[in-house]
Image 1 (cartoon, rainbow, N blue to C red):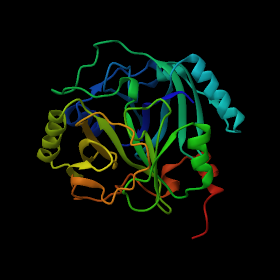
Image 2 (cartoon, rainbow, N blue to C red):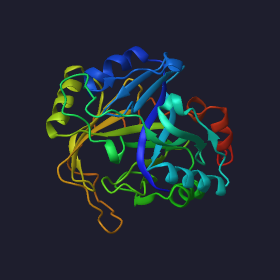
Image 3 (tube, rainbow, N blue to C red):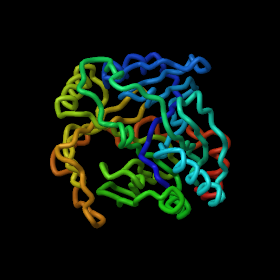
Image 4 (cartoon, helix red, strand yellow):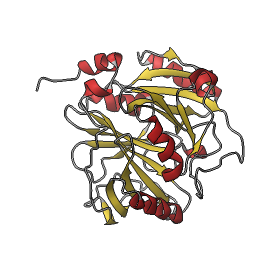
Length: 316
């Protein structure tokens, strides 16, 4: 599939007021205009796209959907056909609500909701950060990456990601446990768009990675997080497999944001890396790796997702 990367993310939250403050004041996001038929939701912009994050009212904080961007109409149509040929149930989404030309919805083999779209609305030079900020590196590379926890890691999940979606398998990195990183076919800028980590009887977002335009943007966000005494996961540091500097802190939703800047452009290594350490320097772990956003599947998935997951779950 000719997929650029993650175009947008949808989340449910019971903390709308906290996100309304945290998004602009801590991360530097712009509050966008909510669609006429979705006024109760909160939409955020990080660049000239209509939105990159949508927060919908819910009883708890959880992932609602991952929106993948196809390069264009023909690539979108070919991708939809590929999903159907693979026996995956595809339903029509609400293009007006998402601000796109067309969108469909489908599930991965462990029950997470995904969407595929093309041609999202945008206006050049329209992004105004919520606080002084140098901007986010998104555009043609997607908004960043997301790491999800799954209670089961069946072969069908890797088949779905690499064969059906056509993603590149990047490797397991230096993380503990069973983890796998993947990037979309058209992504030549970063090591991964999505990763799945194995957590028995656990599901949810572990963290979201956002790229900012400069080291100053990382440092100023780091200072704001410390000034507000927001819980931290890892201090400033540099991963072994990426020439980037980042830190991790927890959001109102209980998952972490990794704020990242590139020290130099990422490049493919040509082979699967097996780092001996997670980071070359820094990244001291000062908080839990799994925040309160990672919970039992029954608290994270809706009934349809749980039905899909049930075929893989094993008795304790």
